[in-house]
Image 1 (cartoon, helix red, strand yellow):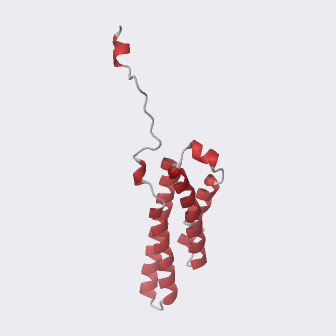
Image 2 (tube, one colour):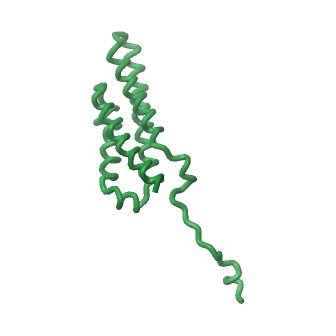
Image 3 (tube, rainbow, N blue to C red):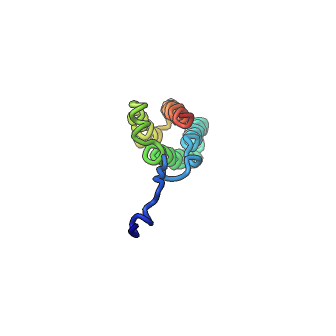
Length: 134
């Protein structure tokens, strides 16, 4: 028996994702998107220019965090078999991240845009939890 045979693993392990799956959860993106919506509502309800300025800054920061959490799910959690089983998944992520970007909640104070973002995150969440049951 040669050295290579002795040190070659007898069992091959594979992992679904980069880290234990328990760390991934679309709730992180949803929570930030809810913060975006709340900042928009507070902006609309205020007449104080300084407060409005702070609300916009918070909204833009949280919008960026939504994109970050979505990208982590898109690139780290979901794998080829998920995209095969749910062919709309790439489009959902693309639409959601755009809704959190400059053409969406970062560039608007329209609560309806935040609602659209939350709806996309909910669609992604439903698929995510379906994959966890599989």
